[in-house]
Image (cartoon, rainbow, N blue to C red; front, side):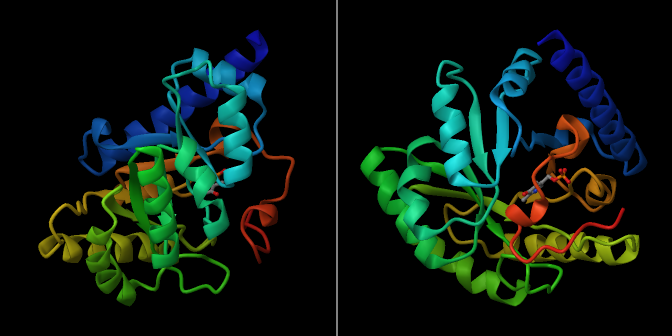
Length: 250
Ligand SMILES: *Cc1c(COP(=O)(O)O)cnc(C)c1O
C-alpha cells in the first residue's frame, strides 16, 4: 500500500506539473482544467491508494469493469464513476445504477435507454457527446457535421444533463494532425454554444490523454483523461478497450 501510494503520488505530482506548465504556456488558469484519472485495468488496491491520495473520481472504459469496482468500493461513498467508453444499449440499465457521468454518448438509442433507466432509478447523469474528430473508422463518436442535429434532440431526455463534447484524437506522432482534432472539437463546441437548446450546456471539452494533453490544453480542454501517466502501463492491450485499435506510436 505504501509503495502504491508513493509511486502514485510521484506520478500525480508529475502530471499536475505538466498540466500547470501547459496552462501557463496557454495563459490559462489550472483550475479550469479537470484531471480525470482513468483507471481501467487498475486493481482495487491501487485505486484505494489513489483515493487515499485524494482522488474522488475515476474514468472507466467498460460498464462491467466499472460496476464491479464500484460495488467492491461502495464503502468509498464520495467516489464518482465516470464512463468514458462506448455504451451498448443492453448495458444502459447497469450504467444508470452507479455512474455519475457518461462521456461517450453517440446515439439516440443509447440516450433513450439511459434516460429511461435513470428515471426508474430516480437519478440523473452528466453527459458529454462523443465526436469522431479523426475520421477513423475505428473510433466511436458522431461525425462533426451530425452533432448539431443530434444535440437538438437531447432535451427529450430529462435525466441526461448535457455538458459538452468529448473526443479521442488521432494516435500519431504528428502533433499538427493531433492538434487538428482538438481544434475541430473546440470549434464545434463554440458553434453549438450559440444556439444550444434550453437545458443543454456546451461548456465542457473532454480531450487529451497521457500522450497529448498539453496540446489539448492549448486548444481549450476543460477535462483531460489520464491513465498511463498516473497508473503506469497497462498489462491488457488497448485493443481490448478500443475495437480495431492497432497500436499507439511510441
Ligand atoms: C484509456 C483511455 C484514456 C487514457 O489513456 P492514457 O493514454 O492511458 O492516458 C482516455 N480516454 C479514453 C476514452 C480511454 O479509454
